[in-house]
Image (tube, helix red, strand yellow):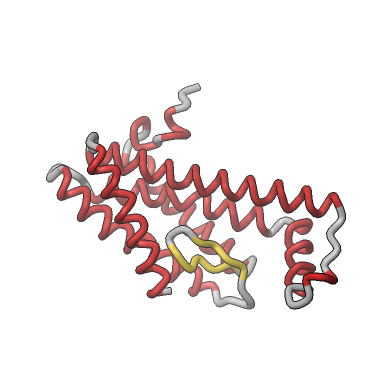
Amino acid sequence: MDWTVLWNPLKSLKSTTILPIGLLFFVLGSWAAAYFDFAFDGVLDVHQVGDRETWHAFMENAIIVALLAVMLYGLGYAINRKTRLIDILNAILVFRIPFYVMVLWSSFPFFANLFAYIEENKDNLANLHLEILQLLGLLVFAVFILLLLVYAILLLFNGFKTATNAKKWQHFLSFGVVLFVAEVISKILL
């Protein structure tokens, strides 16, 4: 098996293959977020909220993709004038997939019930009594979510690096700054 496809799909798959897959996941992930009452309220954030209209999840997701596309394409164009918007867009669409997995993972009944229990007792933490299985479940949940977040950033970084042919440390630092600024702007917008 070619493991490159897991770490850098832009390197091993054609743009015309990645785009429809990314768009399909965009639609399915937005629908899942709406169905399970999650909000994409930042470039790197997924939170459970109350009842949601389906279009809210699509709008939030579209704003995040568009914001990242504009910012990363601008940086990519500054690095290499041959940077193609479709490659940046593909990198972003692939980057979003782990966030959709986070929505599904957070929606498992065990975790949903655990979070509901914690939410009920958030004002009085002294009454919060978690059993060892619940604590282990919380630890497994946190580790898996953290791994997904790191994986998502790695996918975006590798995709950006491939799309722009970035090689210098200044390019990578600029990427980090742009990602941070995009997170701040998305928090303001959403």
